[in-house]
Image 1: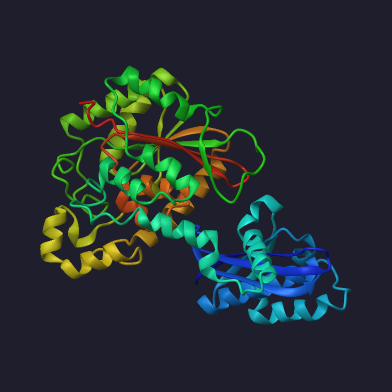
Image 2: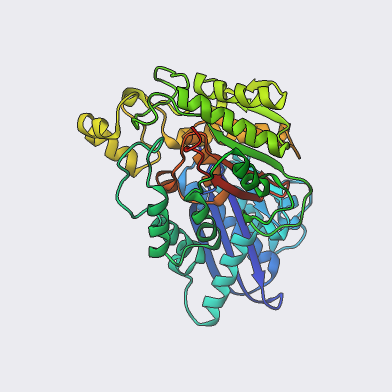
Length: 441
């Protein structure tokens, strides 16, 4: 059953006065904007505008999937409590609006949640755009939304040619990221500021790496913060330090290596990489827990680090790599030759799965998002090392940045590379670092 989040808001400049509403439908797994609605409604009160926004958001969700489970998030305590049935609706102007909202989807499919105003900025911005358009005597158009502009700029980052190898090993690389940034100066602040970090930085030895990771693991360090808004400080974040496993025999050959293949072990070079990262993390001394994918290459990497830190390894099934189906063990060129149509579909859409029953990026995103949420609940305020694979790391970074699915093909993630995401209680996330350690052999 589909699941959507609807965020809605309304405003009146005068109460009553010139009014408008805004609503957005989001994919809860990816944060992707699925639909936007906004309209200038003439002279009205704040509450009328808020209900109008709710109606528009529910209708947009219904149009996407009439059987969807919908979580409505609004900063209007009145609307949330009345639609939840906890407060009576006494005002005659509100009763027909509440009834209209209740008819759009069955009651069992909709739940309501109050959120603070700073977390409802998307819908608030749409409402203000609609009121501004009304003041000019115009209708609000989706193309006028800064969200649409940001989305277009983010897509511009995905315009370089398709990668010459699988996203698990080659992707576009640092040069492609920088070239894309140069070609897309209008990118949103979070994407534009963070993308240079995604290009990777080389370090001469484990000591230099330890110095570099210090800001990554320091909750006081400045960070590129993304999310629904600049909310208040909610205390110490849960910090996930993301470590890709060391090299296997398949890594330098740039072959697809997922959870459905031969489960290779670390090569000699991979073992050296794992020990180098272990020394770097030991020098910093902030890792409190080590959690690993069940696949051998990750577990070996995690054991090397945990042994150096005096910790044990917990295995988490949700951190496994995607299953590449019939592509396992093949190079990108071999897949292109043998399965050209399936490969093109996979490059074009996160919903497409590799040939032979592999896992799509959309399915992987749902799995990894659920794993993230479960681990966050269990490790609030702690610094946790997650030893995993290319795709899970890229998905976690992409979600934290609010980047589109195409961004998965635009990140270079070398063997034994480190990155980190700090998650705050108000829903914000900070991407701290992505470092290339592949030379540590």
